[in-house]
Amino acid sequence: MIDSDKVIRDIYTSDIILMEEEIEMMYGVDDSYFNQLEKIRQKIENHQVVLLEDEFNDLEKSFDDFYFEYAYVQFKRGLELGLCLRNIH
View: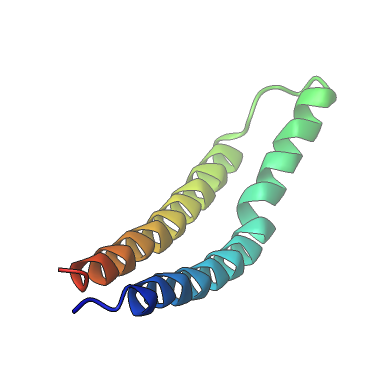
């Protein structure tokens, strides 16, 4: 017999853990990616629309780091959900 309450509890617990990891990751990214976006916004406001090559490379690296970390957390969330749902059958 399937214990649906246990399955729901497992899904909720894994989602809370992954949400905490996602929040920690966002705090780390905030210092690099979002700060760089703010610098670019300020340059645009000051009519300095051209990015230096180093600025562009830094932004690209920060975005890649952000994208990888965020995708990894979402992958783990999907994996945990799949494992919980597998326990139903």
